[in-house]
Length: 187
Figure 1 (cartoon, rainbow, N blue to C red):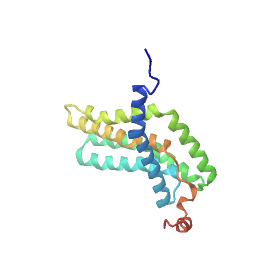
Figure 2: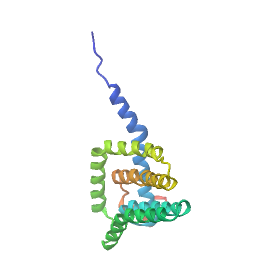
Figure 3: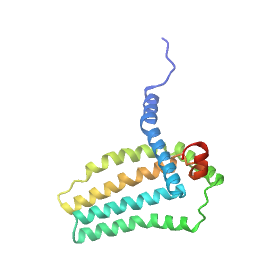
Figure 4: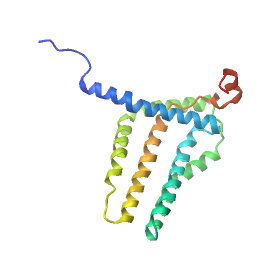
């Protein structure tokens, strides 16, 4: 009896997940970083905390619409506590110089490659939890239900973005240079 040496079913499933789920999300995150860097001229590391604060602001607006009283106070204080790390990161990034050159690019690219290879299973677990978490936000109390729904929306909108932005290919440092873009015909 001859055994075929070839890809196993498990290997084929992992290749399918890489090709149709993980790689497009990584490419989308890299395109987002590139667009952020080109349009705003900001350091690519500032996108993740800015996105996080924007999503928390949207959740606070939704909370004021659906909650009132102590539920709103609890939700607003929770959102404020969730915003503190992002605010701290943005403030600390503002204190540093805004240079993004070849050295920073090489550092971010190396870190992204390491995270891309080492945290594949973590990214897949986060995506699975993100996809299933909104279905578990059921309680009899309407304020509790909205609070759990908001918490699951926060998780869905911020945590996968964080992991994929950290593992995405950073933009080249000269991509925000308008004269460079005109020289190669992009602007």
